[in-house]
Image (cartoon, rainbow, N blue to C red; front, side, top):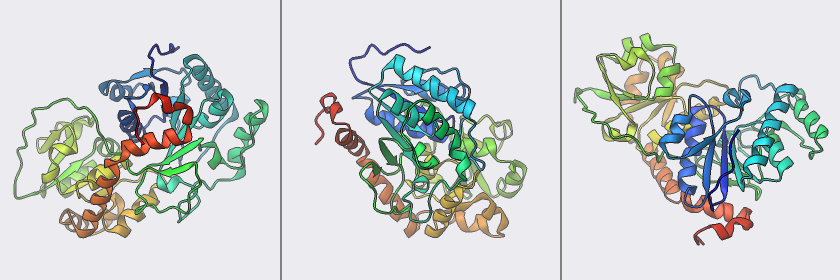
Length: 380
């Protein structure tokens, strides 16, 4: 069981679901807030090494649902017993650690735990998950999916929520996308568009030698993409003779890690001027690639990613893995599509937004939680 923090700074707890893209998003936000808070992350066996590399501590919760929970799967099911255990363990952790604030990225019980303990909650959302996204209402599910939440709220004397969407909202909700890519209707005061979150991580220094053909185009494969993709042999047959292949050093895929034609680097920034196309399946890497003016091939893993694919294709800045492999000239088109007018426009928007991210985060917290203003270095 975690111990309370001895720091004089207020304690901020992060509760991301056990997926790389959510942990990376939370870690990037934590880097901007670390001067003002003592920060701890929910421990998961496969992702906590990322947390330690950035100099943050973790706290553990025994309930395995925290390690495997997912906010938007194709079938969104919650069972009352499992949800109640998650809720009670989260409440116990909050009462022991006594944080000033918590930030949740997809944990189903966070809203209930926040209300029960009185600890304010910030929720992180993608633009297409927001109920104010102009193209759709985010969570469209049958009413029985919300039934376990209704039962628990009644049992523990919590306020009534009208929908599953409201269960994933906080006292404050940060939309982590560009409005140009995912436009919103008029937002209420507890919703803010903070913009895309780029990685600003400390990374180990690697002596990487880039030995490649200067004639061939270069493809970067993000480790989440290549660890999950089911078409590695097709990838090899299609691309390896035509292109230089660069992979993330953190990949655990033996096929690519040990392939004689594959170059390993620690992150995309090492070779961004030489990379022509990025393959990935996390939102963080999408924005990372676009911030360098590089088009994206995205491997969608759930229905919600269709909105992301539609946006990439409408802007002509990327497409899906399925659409690429179904087209006879898909690779030829996209690998010669770097730094187009559309990509340069989005690249500028991303960098302009990210430049002011620290100010936006601190201003938002100070505005919505005025009791915390005394802990901040003056920012306004």
